[in-house]
Image (cartoon, rainbow, N blue to C red; front, side, top):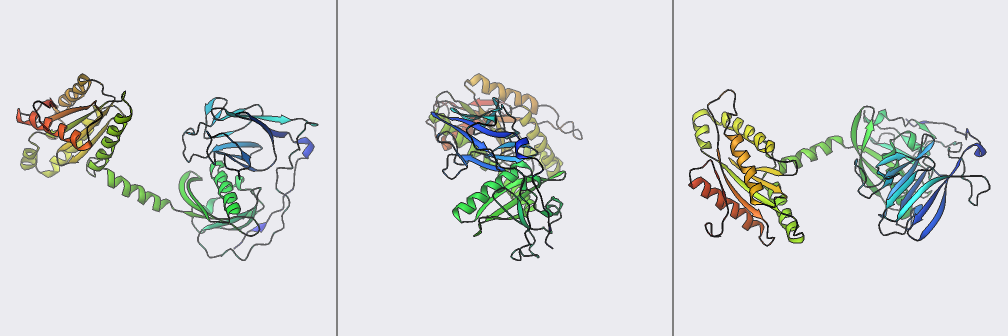
Length: 426
């Protein structure tokens, strides 16, 4: 069932509304951009509403969305953290933030703007009313009533021209039931900004545009896929689907691909990727250093044989927790398989620092870890190698740590050994 038409009118006289503009300093370029639309795309692309020429800004750098009687600026870097594109407001990194007259915006080094109020008589054209005009649009028969997704058509100001509600129980809770409402009153600012932006792109390129983003509905977060279709009238159609279950499955599959299912530690594949990145970084930065520790538990087979594999698995889980507790947040510990673990220590400039970590691990593993089996203690043989030269391959680094670990085990275990090319020939 299509929705009813709602007529809206400008409830404030244009003379009563402050005329806003952006005073933009873009390198050597200076411009005043009067504001009067619900949405502006900002970036280096020539099709953007506000075009910045600096190479420091992205093609689609940010968006301005009119919401709750003020403009909201939104960084288009697709993250919930402060912008990596260095979008700042009054010197503070932001992702989304309302703007007030006088606020200073920084897009990147050398590109800044200030929201100003334009007084009457200023040499800029006053903006038109920011509220949508009265609409009397009949529901479009082209929107399929039985299509399961949320579908809506909107104009260049974000006013909804036609809508087909979703049968999805989560999407059906969105307040999109009246033609004439604005997108910014139906979605959160970041999602509305993306709809505007991709809708403009679809209209300008006459091609399908897609994006995925999180959306807050009520008290929960859902993940949506949005497809923007161009129309001959220039009014894009948005098809929005709830893909939360699919996204959760993808995350579970990815987590299973890089994590050990028993201990929840990263697995061999993940560790190899991180170690390769560390070696590559060392080759480009002489100041960077790292160390690799190979850990093999001593006589773990005896625990399995005497107490069973269930107790052995419990011990592996507890050992994994102890290893994590011995490390800094930036370090990586992984289970390679069986009773073998590996650790990647970042910024380990000295052998003493790596040895201190190995000593801390030995002390932690020497304590009883299973309350139901207080006599069960563990120990480990640890091999250490430093990545200080930057010329070693990944295979060589791992082989060095492995040889040092076997030397420690041959000496009786419960100790560490540092790779020495004179003792451990490659």
